[in-house]
Amino acid sequence: MKIIPEQTTTSLIHSSDQGLKLDVGAFCFFLLGMFLAALIFHQIGIF
Image (cartoon, rainbow, N blue to C red):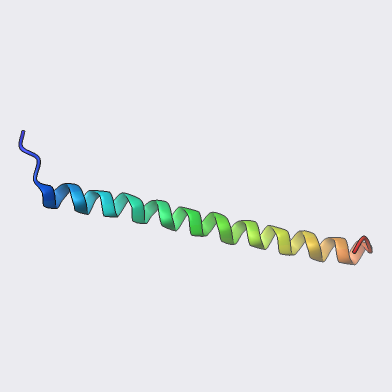
């Protein structure tokens, strides 16, 4: 089997793009969670 450079680079870019999307999603989820936690704490009166 012969490895074609174009195919390997596109597959690498594709996989890294998927990983980036996952990271952004996780980061947004984390920020949303922090915001909700702060809101709840503010309602309770801790902060």
